[in-house]
Length: 257
Image (tube, rainbow, N blue to C red; front, side, top):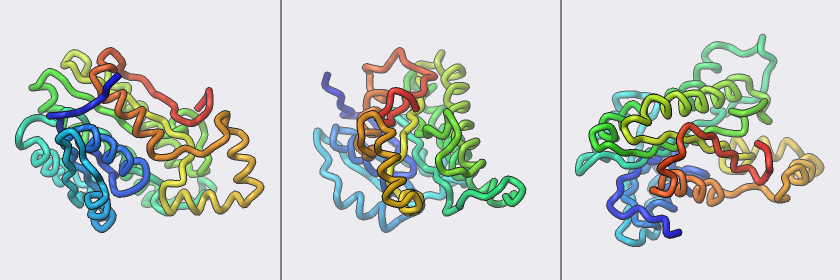
């Protein structure tokens, strides 16, 4: 099975670090023309310098506020200037530096900040790419949700858990809506990865005994790496997955999410 993306345009949101960076790198190394965006301009620049595109691939990076619908629409228009976007991967999200609190102590601004980061970013990106995909009669959308979209969250943050459930719901509803246009929509639900300062703090908070216990609860007895998520994304974005839509694929090292 030779998965490659020559002459395909791929948009990856939240690409500055971790999972998004691994996904952007994997597409560029397999011939894709990758448009990678994030708010973290310095880390995007480092990504652009470190990628080794192959098979005619290349990578373009832009600093974009993905909670701003107009900014996202402008970025997608640039990415699709020479033809419609073929693949969208929405990775942007996270806990926005928040920590678990009792529900009665959660203020509305904190709640909305996490929903904006996880749900609105995916909504804006999908809304922007779909017209071009419809016109082309084809397209792939892959959302990066979380195991927290299938069960309670290890973070203990109510808005994070419910927002990831919302990403799963959005993916399934879009799959139903867009299937007649040749567009598939699937979601990948990663297990715990140490891919950002927030998740490093979470990992550190477990302490050595808690860290060991977490790893021992994983069937594969290791934490995931960005590449583990990238490989699954490449498959769902490829022609080999043309009859798979509305599915949530846990990539967690476990036989369960």
